[in-house]
Amino acid sequence: MTVRTPHDVSDPLPTEIVDVVVIGGGAAGLNGALMLARSRRSVVVIDGGTPRNAPAAAMHGFLVLDGMPPAEILRTGREQVRGYGGRIVFGEVIATERSDDAELRFTVTLSGGATVAARRILVATGLRDELPDIPGLAEHWGRGVVHCPYCHGWEVRDEPIGILATGPASVHHALLFRQLSDDLVYFTRGLELDADTRMRLSARNIRIVDTPVVEVVAAEDGGIAGVRSSDGTVEARRILAVASRMQARTDGLDGLNLPMEDLPDNMGRRFTSGMAGVTEVTGVWVAGNATDLTAQVGAAGAAGALAGAHINAMLVTADTDAAVAVTEAA
Image (cartoon, rainbow, N blue to C red):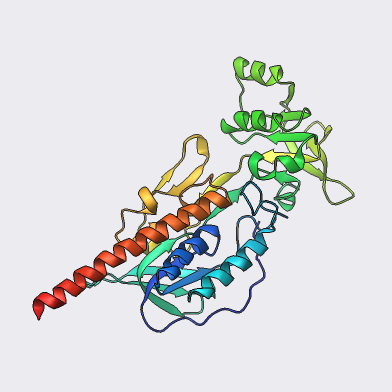
């Protein structure tokens, strides 16, 4: 489900070449931009306006900012980046290309045809959560349907929780949520459980339902009332936990030819990266959920900061090399 956040006024795109374009305006992108702008780098953040955590009422698990609405974090982050001269541009990237000449340059094209040129790129596009195709499930995402025990666990403690299996990782998912509630039901959804796994779930008083799930039933208050199985039985549940399949957002990035990889157990697909978000494509870094699918807001922001510092360090080296070449030529 796509949820767009309210936009403030978009800054104008610069006509000159900037040091860095950051693609993605979440925690990773904004923190990377902050580090770059504080180093007096010209930086433009392209924000598509569809943050992963937009449906959530609050962000949790990050010291000091725990409980703050995601939109408020983004608004404050934009203000801080702008305070150091960074620009925030709202739009969707439709193409990104690298020049063929000797000078390393990138051109980023937005929907509508506007372009911006940059010396380096930081990809911080985040990810999309793919949910099981169960009627009534997606509309409760981020509220009655949750995925992360560390992001939402305290808020759903002691509630009747249902675990909708999506793969092998769902077993451990159930055990994590068992720490938060004594009332758990594990819906296998046709996925096989061996005898040892059934014993382990049973030992933690997690009830197993093998009957296929056909519908999530809404409650009169707008929340979740339960889960309907193919035999017509409705298992009363207020919260459903789903280990979504996480897909790094790649829209408009094909021209960069960034390497990607699938994670085990069908957990998702990410951009591959090394230390500080370095990629195999010279001049391109990746940070946040686009490469670390399980990173929470704090971890994503920290990764963006590290990538931003590394980009600045590499630009310092490039600037010095260029200055030396000019001096030697003179």
